[in-house]
Image (cartoon, rainbow over all chains, first blue to last red; front, side, top):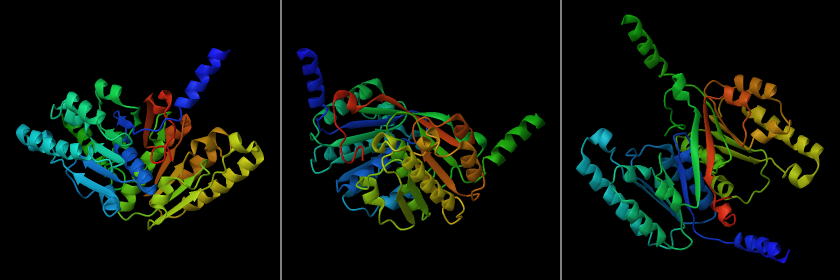
Length: 188
Length: 188
């Protein structure tokens, strides 16, 4: 009994842990980037300082950027330029992604930043623009209380291993399938 | 060939459809309410008018409420009072939920509202505080261009049938499992 109680006590004790989390929103369903932006609103509402680095998106006319643009305590970076499927220029893609990653590394050394969002970052891993080794090293040496949110399809197993909370959005159905076009306020 | 082309053409034509969507974020993973709040930011950024009705949550100290509180074009209602698992008073739960549902019905008749978020609404169906029949009737008669987002675990099949886009958040892993407590900016 004493031993069992000790185990339970240890569990309760450990549940008091506070630390910076790595959260991943992956899967093919809708709601990955929006979940990150909802978390951003939540954190900013608590007076936390945050940064967003968008890896693939090149558009700056999104509703989220317009809405958050003037929020205090927030830096928002659109670092994508469309990438391969538009540019057809792998060297340019790599250079663009490395520039975005350098920016991220700066934030990963800044303990005043409480929440860092790497939107569509999984594609940077998929296309080999960053390696899992350098990402792991950079995330592991970040400030203790800094939260990092990563979004994008197909998060690789090594990234999931590294994360504290991972949510996979499954597509049950999508309006596209019924011929509804992308609309402002919904898709961007 | 002519017939095949006609089918493809019809598909392209239909993909130009714009309409108010019903979007559901369900499942046990993290990122349902935050996806709705991210969509809220997106819509507000496009100058759309929105309303949020929270069915179960009773706390008004959340980061999201603090952040969105003063946003223009938005009404935010915390309608829950903790419900059964705290109140142990089923009659009070029902009365509270019916009051929230009446509020929702008002918004479902207001064509100036472009986006309506029913946060944790699936529980109102689960506990029988509202019926799927009245919900279906009210949603089907809402303004043509009004988007409705519903969050909560275990969305019933009839609600999924009614929806245009459904995303199910699966829990791959959660920091709770490793003994990390709920933290501001992450869970509320």
